[in-house]
Length: 412
Image (cartoon, rainbow, N blue to C red):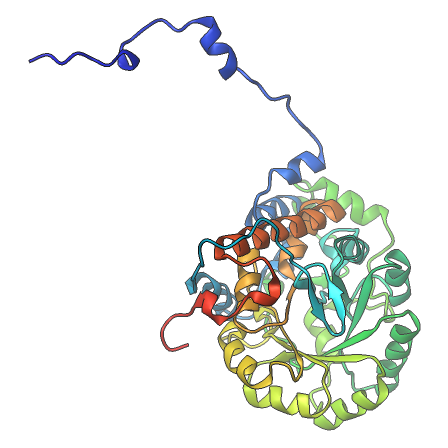
């Protein structure tokens, strides 16, 4: 038996009037700003960065120690958790601001210290500090930075700039940096304690990574595919450690010559007596050590395994977070880095007990993809993802996030 077709399903010749609303061609857009706007995630910025950056500096940013197990596990930790949303909440407005170390931050995330940053893209620390200031979040300058303490303070005079310190065998040099940071108005000192020696970063070994990058036959060939990076590199001030004297050699040689394997809690006590601002200790990977540094007067701690760049198979900060928060929440400012690649990751960390988070690779991918505009885009992506995730969880304030919003795999 033949069934009569509904009128809407009967074939007909399309009318011009029906086609007109469908034929809306967008005017093509060009340039860095348009290209960056097409990136919707940090992973897409990473893909852009890889196309635009020579292999050695890209791998220095992207890689980790040995088999890179730690970094992969850190990212998997965020992927494996499950959100638990609440419904029928009024989430018309969302406030992403939070307090960290006595001041308000527009987002619950700041920029972590990263070394050799102008090697990734020539704007380097200047782009990072200015983007952070514009976004209303803290920026942390590394001891291994390629812009000086004074230049970063001048580049972002209205930003909240922190300084990260590696304590060296030569304490006088460390003290000189501390004094410069204080005079430049940096209110927070972040001392990194997980580097008695440098980790085995095998991508750098394979690439023959040096500071500054060497013009070998291999790098010249690589340059032919990334002319913009090399043009910027060769036409700006030569790369050097602006907080230190100039250095030429491999990354591992530099690290092993500077880092102090004799560092102890006595040095932390000396630093607490010396520095009058906020003191944060970065690189904590056990509950026992977090207790100790708080007893020694740390205003804040960063649960971190150095982005997986030191000890492979190191503890995962997100897995450690809940037990640290249960014991130390309210006694110190609890921060977390490693593995963060989305705004949802940041929301999860805050819900599980972090007061604040830090990003390294996530903003560096933006930097390599498009300089200052790329960092702005990375922060814009993360901000949008945070706001959307919070709305979908039924939360409109960072302070209202709690462990009930996240379910971890059994056993964690």
